[in-house]
Each structure stands twice: as structure tokens, then as C-alpha cells.
Image (tube, rainbow, N blue to C red; front, top):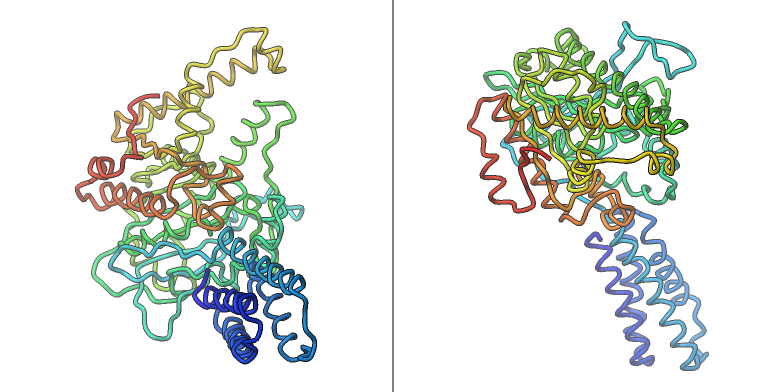
Length: 496
């Protein structure tokens, strides 16, 4: 809860306790009621309304009405007094509980020496037709770029969701509808600030900055990787993260067009359908990343790039992704020689059949749940009776085993080429995104995250990413062994 909200709750509780203990302190009760009204107005002015406090607002409204319209000659029975007091406490504590489960969170502060600038732009790929659009126009993307910035007094930190390029209501309405949650879950996002300054100039220093691409997971958004992008940019990287069009909850383009999610995982024919879906979408994700790299070589810095282009070291390119984006990070690392090093955060690989081992530095960071799944898959064995019980054909089962075995083989073999397999214990799939901070208790209850400490995990993940890219893009001495020694929740794997 925010400071004025806490103070307002304390005042409201104090006013109820005064009524319970001594109802004759009319002047003191009236005085504190005026103070409650003033603090309430200050809260609305400086902190702003949010739905989690609606019960508290109801109490303040009723308290204010009783202040001005109370019948002073009427004496209430003790029972009515207790009923009113308990009802008031119920309203106040309801808001306290909602505020606890749906906090106004702060992203981790970037740890680098640079301030961070950001801007967004639309890029159009005229070589690909958009297959998920009825218009069959060329594919287009919204990308956000973070970079070391020169900050002056005219700049202020931008909101997490930038109004002029992404309509908050549209994105959130689509996202919570897909997740079967109430719209009220997300109403307060407008109060959450990033650590970036929108439109700031890139810092004027000698040298160029390595480029890092971040690819989000299926159905999420670049927004969920803001803290990772900001931290890397603060240490001297230019970071680009796209919204993979039709693979996000919603993407809004500058002309007002909104591209909603159209890439569901198909399960009609079991695992084979699911695998085909991931292969199809993964190919699109990978082509998006390739196109972005092409654009970094060619876009007009005067019109679009805030003088960014001439400050990027395009001989040093890294890529990191989560979930499907993690698989795309591996795929683009495999296919594109311009990629120096990559990271897959809890993502599965796709199109693994007969693929050669990746011969460049690659880091796999896995949740504890994923590691256990990999171990089970490696030793999975089912007889015909079990296959029949699950409704799986022998042919499909053999395809599944081949695919999973190939994936595990590629991961384990990466170690021979400066690869690393790292497990973060007590984490779930979304502990590799900023979603873990949005409503941590609810998210954990839904099984999307693990039991790990959210704040420590976000800082640890940022530390790991930074150390990996510093090692392979800036050629600094890596500290991964030290990081593992200092964090018992980390475990390095040689094989599953």
C-alpha cells in the first residue's frame, strides 16, 4: 500500500476505536473525521484512485455523511454502535487485504551507471505477408528500444505502459479476458512507473554499445521484460524488444489498429497438434528477430532511431527470450551468424529433429519445475496398455520421445561449446518475467510462479543475464561460479 493510503486506513481505524471506547468524545471524533476527509482528498489528488481501496472509500463516504447529517439528539443502542463499528472495520480491512494481494509495485532499480532512455516505433517487414490478418497485408511490429541516456530536467520517468503507443484499456481488457480474470485486476497499472525516460537522447560517450534482443513468450508482451531491458541498458547495452504481432494479448499500432491474440496452442489431435503449433509460431518469432536485426543495420537514425544506429556495435549481438521466445532465441542463434550469444529462459526448443549442436555460447535458465520435467522426459517409458489408456498411438508416442530426446541432447551438448544449464530452484514459469511482481500472491496461487522471494529473484535474474552478456559481448571475466556460490537456489547442470 502507498503511504497516504496507510495513513488513511490508520485514521479510519482510530476513529472507530474512539467511538467504541468513548462515544462522548464528539469533538475529537468530529475533528478526526475532518482530518480523514482531508487526507482522503489528498490521496485522490496525489496518489490517485484505485479499485482496491473501494471499500475504504465507502467507509470515508459514510463517515463524511454522518459528520454532516447525523442527528445529534439521537442516542444509538450499544448493539447498533457495535454493528456499525464492525462493519466499518470490515470495509477498512477489506481494502487492506486487496491492497496486499494487488499492490502498486515498483520494478527493480537498474544497477548500472547510466540512466535509461526508451522509445517505441513501428517497423514493417515487406518480405512477409501477415497470415493472421484478414487483410493479408505485410507483417508489421511494434518494438521498444532501451539505451543509455543523457537525462535532463525536462524528462520524467515514463509509465510502464506508454499511452501514446499502447492503449492501456485495450491491452488490459484483452489480457484479463484471455486469462479469465476480472478487469479490475489491472485497473491500477496506470500508476506504475518504469525506470526509463521516454524520448531521452542517447548518452554522448566514446565507443558503441552491444545490441541485445529480448523475445517475449506466447500470449504475453514486451512489457513483462521491462526490468531486464532497463538493467541491461543501464550497463551500456542497446536493448530491443518487440511485441510479436498477434502473439501478444493485444498490440496497438500508431494508426489505432489493434492486433489481438490469434495464436492459440492447438490440442485437437494431442501432442502432435501442440508441437505443430509451437513449430509454426516459433518460426514466426524467429523471423521477427531476424527482421529486427536487419532493421538495426538499415533504419534511418534521424527519423526513427534518435541517433541510436550509429551508437550500436552490430558486431556484438545477443538475444534472450522467455518460453516460446526462449526457443526463438535458440533458433535465431543457430541460424544467424550475426548472433554472438543467447539465453533461453524456461523455454522449450522447436524443430529439434536432426539439428546440429549450437557452437556458440548459450545459457539455459530453467525453473525447478522444468528441470524435474526434463528428468522425467529423459527416462519416460510407456507400454501399449498405458498408451491406450491415454489415447495416444505408438507412432505419436515415438515422435514425442524423439522430439523430447533431441531437445535434451541439444541442451546437454551445448555445454561443450561454452553453454550453461542453470536451474533456479522454487521458481515457476513466470518467475522469468515481471509478471511475478504484478500480484505475487495471486500469481503464485494460480501456479504461474514458485515460492521464491520475488524481489530477490528479479535481482538475481538480472545479475545472471548481465554477467553472461558482459562475458560474451564485452569480453569481461565472468562471475557465474561466484553467483552460484552466493545463491544456494542456483544449481548448474551437466545433464538431466
